[in-house]
Every structure is written in structure tokens, then in C-alpha cells.
Length: 456
Image (cartoon, rainbow, N blue to C red; front, side, top):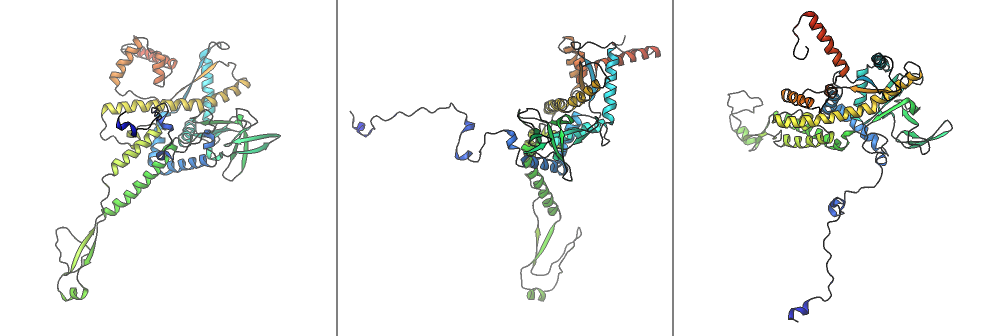
């Protein structure tokens, strides 16, 4: 045994190897002490006035914040376009069978629905305006309602602010209804039975669920009400608005140059000396003599701050990421953008718009169509249940028309895309397109016009 062995601990326990078999995101430490999370439903997170406050702040941002207004305008223009969604009906041959005249039946359904929605809004809004208002509810609040009148299919778009997200229990007839965030359930039913609305004068209305279409953006499977998409970036946008206002005021003050006369000798000495007057106005090219013992000091705040643009850009990038669109579109900032980066950003942004189109169709357009169509079936106006509604909305031009067209021709020739799919991406119906080509061809032949390639 060496002399150093007497200083060593005998039977010292071996240290366990450091383990990496856990999620670092679940660590508990002093640095993460403020990150306290409870395991509970999203519906619990939205109660106690939280959802109401989110809605009110989102409404305030839409009324006052130019960036949030820009977001709503961008999505509305790209989801609806200038004409809104147009209904086209197809028939599922696996259903109850085809009508004697398929095209006649399809035309009657389409025209009847178009006439209905154009005049059904009790506030007098056109069908396009109804779509725009419903989409605005989704973009601003993440939630909205279409409420039918008691005895007919006329309807009204209602803001979620008039359906308070409160938890309470009420007697409706002889039934006990439990309202969760303003939506009423009976017992353990999965589907709502009633909705509770309160108008601007505080009058309460309990409306059966079969008279209500509740459209919303869902992020969680158990979610009852929608919340604003801007929620995760609301604070940043609010503070940025205040920062921009402060910089604007400071820059305006800085632009108005001010100066002060500073007297460095006593008044009695200054009056004994001769020459010079105090100057409160100046003209270009003139020199002035001040009284003895008087100096001029200028007030010159350095604004706008040189870091203002970089800070603003960083915050707007965070906000744009939360909203799902590019910073270039949100800030309307094309400075320094090249073709490649603009193309990548534009294509990714269009996928977001297509997603919003799908959400709008499933949450608003399809429920409205089926509510109307089922009522017309019961009334005997139509006799087929195998219809399939298809909605054609805003489409986009190619980023590089020549290259994109060449690629599309190759895809068609290889059978990787169909004409129906290509036309649908452009907002066109293949039957209408074929009929239009046929009519053009006949007119050109009658007029003796030389037909272009593909028309022979």
C-alpha cells in the first residue's frame, strides 16, 4: 500500500453516469421558474374572461393597428378575391341514381342556391358581403355565428362578442342546460343543443342549435370556441404600436430645432457692455451679433433612432410568423427582396391561403349549403340526395408564367395531373370550360376566323 492510499476514501460509492434520457424542455431550474404550466383543457384556459379579453383586444387592434388591418385585408383578398366563392354541384353516381337530365338538375340546384344566398341576409348584405363578413369574424376573432330566423332560412352574421363565453347553468323549458363558454349542452351530449346570445341592450336569447351555424378555427380537438390567431403576437404588436408612436413624436420634436440663450455673466455686466440683441428668428446667409456674455445652446434630440428600422423589422417578423404570412407581405417591404426569395415566400404563403379557403369551406360554406339543401328536399323542390358541393374561389397567377406553363404541359402529358385538377386550381369548372371552348369554336368558324392551334 502506498503512502497516498491512506488519504483515499474506502468503499466510496460509484457516481451514476449522467443520463440524457429525458426531455430538456421538461427541466425544472431557476432559469425556468417563471414557466409554470398546468395540465388542463384549452377550454379551461379560455374561461374566467380570458377569451372575452382576447376578442376585445383583437377588435381594438383591427380598429387601430395598421399591421393587423393589413393581415386581415391580405387574407380576405387571397381567400375570397373580388368575387367570393362560387358553387358548382356534381352528382355521386354511387348514390340514389342519376336524374334523367343531369345537367338540368345541376343547373337548377346551382341557380336556386345562388338566388337564395343573394337575398337571405336580413341585414341586406349581398352574398359576397356575407362571405367577407364571415371571413372577417374568423380572421379577427377566430369565431363567429350564422343565425337563422325561427320560421325561414333567412339569416344574420353575428359577432362572437354577442355570445359571451361564460360557464353557467340554466333551465330551458323542462331541461337543465349547462353552458360552457356560451355553448349549451344537455347532460353528456357531445353536440351542443343551445347557444346563449346577449344583445347590446343586455337582452338574453337562448337559441336552439339547429338554427345556428357556429364557424370557428380549431387548434385543439376538445376546443369549444375559437380564439384570435393574433393571440400569440398580440402583446408584441401592441408594444410596437406604442414604440412607433413614441419615435414619431420624438422625431417631430427633433425636426423642430430649438435653441436657448445662456447668459454667462451677471445682468449688470451685460447691460454695461454695448452691442448685440437677442435673436428669435434667423434668415439664410445672415450673421448676427449677440450681447456680451450670451451663448446659444441648441436642443438636438437624435431621432429617429438609427436602430429603429432593425428593431421594427425584428418584431414584425415575429408577428408575421404567428399569423402565417411572410414579413414582406405584412410590412409591405419589398426593399432588398430578390426574385428567388420572393418566389419561395409567395408559394409558401399561398399554401396558407389555400388552407384558409378549405377551413372557410368546411366551417361556413358547406354547413350553409346542406342546411338549405335539406330544407329544399323536405319541401319537394329537389329529389336527389347524392349531390356533392364544390366551391371555386380565388386563384393565383403563376410566379413565372413561361416556366410554370411548360412544367404543367409535361405533367399533363405524363398523366400526373388531370385537366379537371388544373382548371380547379384556376377557379374554373371543367364542364363550363369545355362548353365555353365549344361555343368559341363555333363562333369563330361562323365568322370565318382562322382558328388558333388546338381549336381545329
